[in-house]
Amino acid sequence: MEQKKHWAVFTDNCSKKSHFIHRILSGNLPVGFEVLADQKGLLFSKTVIDRYMDEEDRHDTILIDHTGKQSLQTMSSGEQKKALLQYLINKTPDFLILDNPFDNLDTDSLIALKDGLAQQQHKISTIQLVSRRSDAFSFTTSTVRLKDRTIIPYNEKDTAEGQVLADSFFSAKIPPPLHSKDFPTETLIDCRNISVTYSNKPILNAINWTIKKGEFWQLIGKNGSGKSTLLSMITGDNHKGYGQALYLFGRKKGSGESVWEIKENIGYYTPAMTDKFSGLHAARNMLISGLNDSIGLYLHPTENQLNLAKQWLQLLGMWELRNVNFCELTLGQQRLIMAARAMIKHPPLLILDEPTAGLDDRSAALFVSLVNKIAQESQTAIIFVSHRKEPGLLPHHFYQLSMTPQGSIGEIL
Image 1: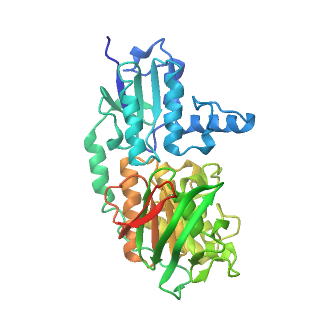
Image 2: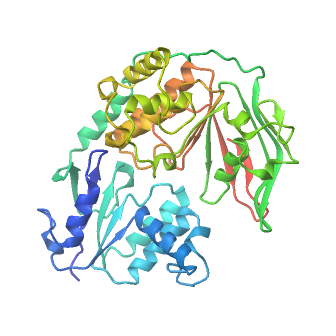
């Protein structure tokens, strides 16, 4: 049997992945990929999952699940990717393009997906677009880098040097807020035996978690373990908090507080916030919008606001990019801006939900370095949500959700 080729194509936040994918699938093959001429290829990506999910929703049907019983909308990230892989394999392609297939997967789901792909390595060639070194397949036969639109040789030394640079990148202090506001109580969040059930399905079971000023937590758990549900309790968005012993910033949920009063105490960022945002705001204005709790700036900024934004942009090494549209920044630069935007008021609590998903090694290291700096130089408590154990991240505590038939239970590690 002829041995199949397997490429690891390392990308960074300037790589034109869409252009590369189009070239491969249209047969306009770059140098080094000529063996794929006249072969049938399919794309495995989050974009493909989203497209099928939209089709299932619009036509009220099930397209991907081979059993015909479960829609993509009701699956966890790991289940969605497993279902898509099987669906594509059943179409008997000659090769698969896999765009960061392991993003947003817990360890068990990642291992299961890797095993599923490894079982196909002698039947189907793979082109793995990968941003993190640790994600590359063990059966890779060729390693290259996608620089802008060009395939070049891969040099592992470049990535390692990038990570070392990140550790010393942020030299200035975190800028203070415009208005200093000390939260009156030491305890910010207090969950006492919190349980959540949806349609008779238990999600959370007797969760006890206390978050105090200045603490740095990493929230971990498998796909589908209820992390998003728990976060929605903390942000006040989940109506299941009523009638429970849930205390948010000194007040019991349902004691007359508004959701906006809760959110005034929270800085929040998840990449999904900007997925459908046009980004036609200058980087500086995007940062200032954090003072008004809007995505983008729609009010004329004051001199004090402009000066504060300058301090943050100088800290991020992005002052020269202040007038560049947000959408024109690299993915790594966008994430730094959004982290600073969430932190610009020094809220009592900062929530970062999968903030490094899709970043290359250097950009992830920069983001981690910024988060560590915020933890060290402020009284803001941090909840960092990630399936990945980020190198260099220095949380004080881990809170783990573990799934049981009665709902996920919580444990401090």
